[in-house]
Length: 335
Image (cartoon, rainbow, N blue to C red; front, side, top):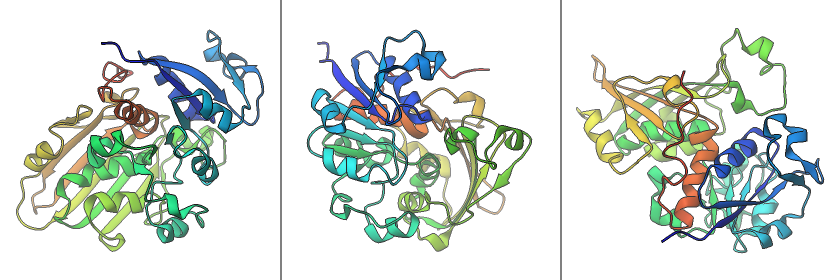
């Protein structure tokens, strides 16, 4: 039996994640786009702002978010970090919400304040469900009114640690991300002429995704070294993790158990960005080093699986659709 059409809207359409959300929603067989909003635009055809979308008969408006919610079954918030707090609080319980910002990813107000700022609505932190289907679980997401999408670094880091939860003595993660992860506003450190021939690390052991990563491994901040690094490419994250575990463990056995029901996780002998960019897949590999250290590698598209694709997974679960609907045949851009 065909499913009812899902009326979907995006608040904050003009950023990279908003645009990627639109691309994926347009390809979804049961979705109808209702509102695309931006504070900087009113009744502007989306093709005037982004010519690659000139074929679409869709307007960007500055419609009030409560009006957007009234017309929609689900609202995707693609707003900057720290600006979605009030919108989520206003819409929670009125319409299904999927928040792609960091504002509700942490369930502890003190931790949120340490990495971001004081939270205006701490009472909601434990009500909003963390939307990483492979770890949170389909049942929790299906019953959620509001879902907080994971961070891109955080999602990949968690996927690398999750099979070994409770067994990790220490973890070192070195992860390289493309320039789209920095957003569309150019600054010197992310400007293409500088980044194109460069690689540099930043926020070492101080990145805001650390609280999400350690949760999946059941470790503390002192057990993790996290080295986020900017790379000379546009899309994707490639990560190496070196894990010291308690006991002699065969890593692939635990990974197969952890992800046996995860349709978007592919366990590979080797991992490469070119195999995942444009898709919702996350490729992982696990090998044992000569000293027993587990060498884990992973790759994903930061705008798809690391953001908007994961949001579609969450939407599918919230509306009792197959988790893969509109995503599984989303091919990798290869070469």
